[in-house]
Length: 306
Image (cartoon, rainbow, N blue to C red; front, side, top):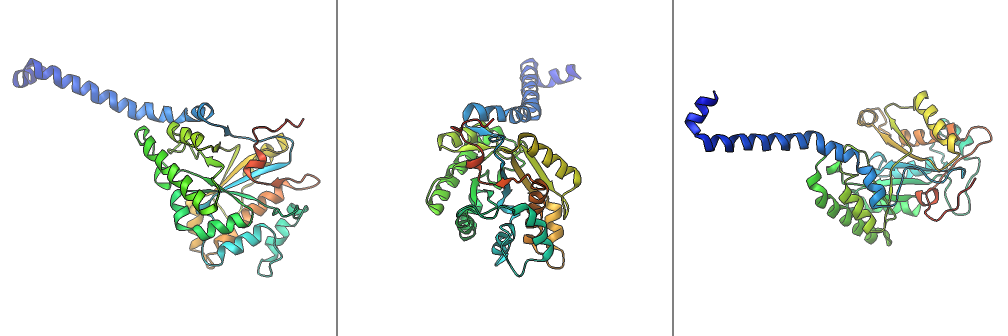
């Protein structure tokens, strides 16, 4: 075969062809092995490039509960209903099950003007532009917004899109500042299967003065109630350090589709029920934990509480 190819293309052409094949093979190996490996090492880049946190201060009984804005109901009246439920407002429309599930969890009602439950909500540039009134309402209620990578970069691993993703983060930073009246304090690095941990994004977040959050515990909701193993894992993480945990709760596409197809289609009931289950499991007995904003859980200049 080599003899025939050489006879047709000539010696010089054969060498060029082999060089091209080797080059293509090398690029394929880099794309198949190198980029996923680099992406997995990007959390290390986060510590080099920025102030990053997977956990906050222990022994404070303060926790940060994080959600994606895409998992929160945004329809007319749904957002207010959801916020009333998680703050355990005395809402006549809330059913008895929701009220009883959260009664023990909020033994300490409101501290000064701060709500009992503070959420840290991940928002993208597109969501800031599409849902400005809903986001303003969340901030007005005392919840914290955290910038996250655009949805177009989730599940995408491409080292060459770093500058484009960083430009999107800068656009989100500007849109947030214009909408809220102050710059964002936090950037959510997202999971390792996307662009969220790309060094260019982490470097941009640092240049913009934002801290980077990961998580100490992730809870993927795939049913109407949390599984016992999920609750046990969550309680183990929280009680081991007695506070400082960054808990990321995310809804699977399967359960969101199931709720939308149900009779009432009440998304607010699902996510508020999950939050109340978490509160109820963590604050049983004499031990009570407080859900606060990330800035109160992770502090650069905080003294260690022993």
